Length: 366
Image (cartoon, rainbow, N blue to C red; front, side, top):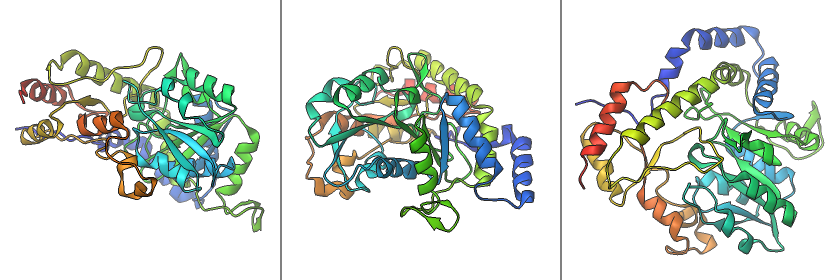
């Protein structure tokens, strides 16, 4: 019996081993490990890749989120619209600053449903936080139009969508600030923690640079109460290696998911769809099954790992019990939490490994 991991991020390391090790040694020998030339170069290269004016490297994707709302002055007494179907970090970025998350149910593409947003806008609403869950773009044009109509800010959680597009343009083109994570499992993942923001606003760029470094622009002269959230030199250097290959690794993931879509033929399994005019970079390949837990156990019995992204929607988490939600309040997000399952998907996955996963899926009868 084969053993297939849900993810094997070491495959990319071995593929580009010489480049990674040369870069790591270069940084180690430089004696410059924080906010040096590698960070500066990565910021310029990632901004250029995405067609953005500014990129600021940070300590994590969550830091990118909460600092965005802090810099925008969104806090206690304010509301932010956020999808009910997301990883909890999206919501934490809002609540860390004291603002209230207002949940909107997802559409058939796992992302926020634009048709359900306007009824949730109040005089307290300051922003929409879109989340490109599993690597798929939201309907960015609709979100931008809603924000412009109601004078709201559009913040994007792109932790899972490095390189995703809507209508041929990178999703960050539509936003005020886009937030990224470089956690190792991401399409553009480092070898530890890391994050960044993209923006076209020079004032935001300046503020992020100040806040990430104890609130100072000049060393030991602190203008605001900031934090320590700096992308380090080693991570930046290694991310530069991965960024140079990001288009090809995203294309590889597309080929893998194309095969899943073509060859998984089981009426008990619902395959993911891609929104018209949008693209997905396939951070995850998420199927749905009404007998999800049974299917997961069946896969495991046959040596195939899978992961539930995510078993508990944020509104039902213990952390947000104070918001007062009960099961049944957001039924679409809850149904997704009960039925979604992420299949093995990673760069370097072999044809025979994927064929085995497909074989086991097609043999499942419930």
